[in-house]
Image (cartoon, rainbow, N blue to C red):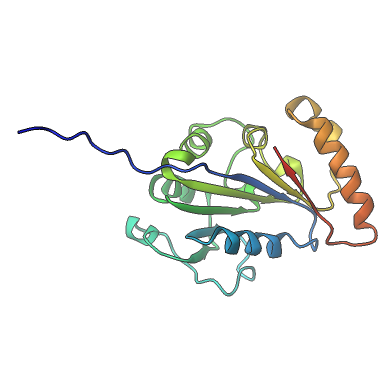
Length: 191
């Protein structure tokens, strides 16, 4: 009897996107638009129960809770929950609202598992924060896109940690200048 080779699971190019800006600039609205354009399964982790209200809450207590379709949220996220997300969430988009809550600002086994397993798990990741410093350099330096709204951060403090410092600085200055007239102005940086 002839043996057949196992087919590897389908893979796709995955996106690593940062949405950065101060409160009230339109980050949540932008994330919702992104999710709609990606048109698939999405899990939003947010510490704010009053955000993303139209999407159902998922407790994510057992592996079967990760087998859902459409968009859902969890608003009691923790770093412990991230271990389950890395283990059980695949083929969709993961949104980390206030991303600093779930990931440490240094390389850790969990951070590497999240970042390096994206393609195998067919997972896009959207990091949401108020400043570049809300996204660890390990992730920021591998972003495929950054949607930048007005920020107040002094970017010079991160100069040594950012591969695209000059591009980020120039874009930040332009966005902040244009946000004086339009507080929802943003610019997409493709890397």
